[in-house]
Image (cartoon, rainbow, N blue to C red; front, side, top):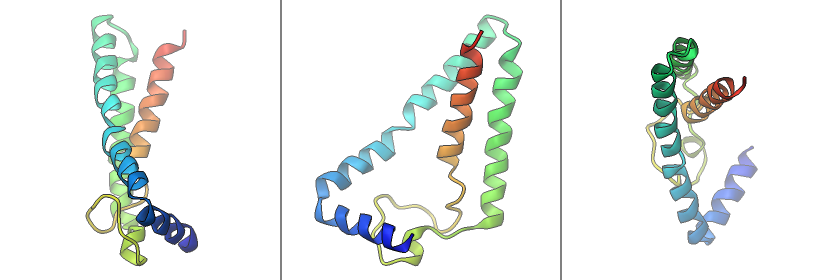
Length: 117
């Protein structure tokens, strides 16, 4: 994995346009979920749908679990251990599991659940 991170970092250092693109995608890819999830909750509330409680509580408890699990594991970020330059600064440690990925995953599952008949 060390070789993978180092080669990716080296490539991005040589190609600043790609580095900038990845930074933009990383920064802005979360916003659709920030809007979509509350919109689904409002829809479920307005239609008096029984799924409202489940679609609210499952992501909440998943986020809580991932946050606590990250603190227990406290895995260092790759740039804390390797000679690489991060694309975006973060606090040290607590890099695994990713809350962004876990949140996007559970919200996507809730969207599928709401969408299916």
